[in-house]
Length: 538
Image (tube, rainbow, N blue to C red):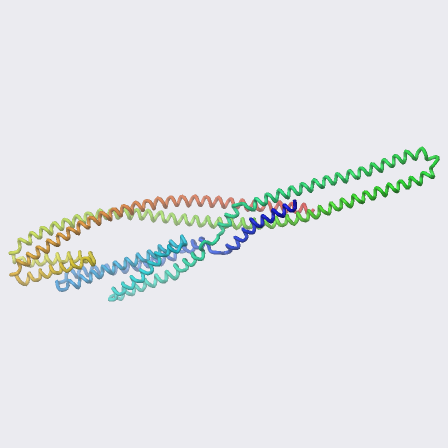
């Protein structure tokens, strides 16, 4: 039985205690996702990004002011200065576009970083690396474009410094921390191992073996006590029987053989006393040996009980630490729940923005209809120009209308970007024609004829652009609808996640209660073992 007990304890140490201790030593004070959550909750990255967005907004605002001034200058410029003013307007549009691309690259950097912090996979850093490369390239190009504006160059330098500071103070430490965490073991793995209840199986078996051992020893002790009592009773019976026989024989012969019988009886009594003393001494030695063996067994049981007490104390400490870890997990779950609430609010805001975008698309439809009406008016103007070929007295009015038409066409060319450069040349040619019409009245007929052709071409191109605008508006409306539907889905998914996090929080609370119960259960065997140890020692 003692061999079975030793085997059970060895199996318990090998299969339950030693793996748990090894796992806890492996964990040590290693970083976990709780540390990552603490770092993110400091919101250092948000502070930097708010400043970056503020500076980019300020930069774009300056360029918008310049754009308005340059458009005004272009509308008031003479034909000889139209080209220079048009280049400045196009230059401003390009600067604003590059600035928005810079803003998009910073968003890609932040998105890639957050994806890596959550998943811990290297491929999630690809948007961050691409955004970083685009940011460097775009800022270098933008510095060259605004080299004539020192204040804007200084503002770009401030933006670059701020992004670099964000990388050094936020991105690099958080990525390093996430790499350090990796897939390392945490107290959750210890909790899972404890939840397997490996030690309970061995302890239940150990307790049953100890109970069986004690029952056997008590049975043996009872049997040996009964044997000792029976032996003493037999000796007493033999002594009493001998005494009765001796007395019975000595009475009839007392008168005749008193002298001769006295001596034999004395010898008989001495022999009986020697016989009783020897037997009793032998029984005493046997009983002493039994007691000694039981004492040794009790000593071993005492040692085992002491070990059980130590193990119970360790189990109690682990349970207490587990309870603390569960409380921390509960706090983290509550924090995640708060973050999900923020996501729900953001999804709601995105849904509202998508709805507003749809309303703006409707307004854009109205604007496109007005542009179509303007094209119809341009067609009517073409007919009027046909009729004023012979009316030289209204040359000034024709020049004004042509110049206005040239300006509108130039603005459309600027909005079209690189693809509108050819159209800008056409617009400038119209302006030149208007100038020549004022210089030579004799050529006014041919110039008007040519202007009519150009005006028809412009009207047709504007018609095509309006049709393209309708297509773009329609596609944008579909995309806006898709974005709105996606925002609704995100909103619903965020609500569902919030409910799931609440259920997880409730489950963590249940685990906390179970862990505290396990700690109290670990204390009970300790008290029982100590009581048994005291009884064994006594």
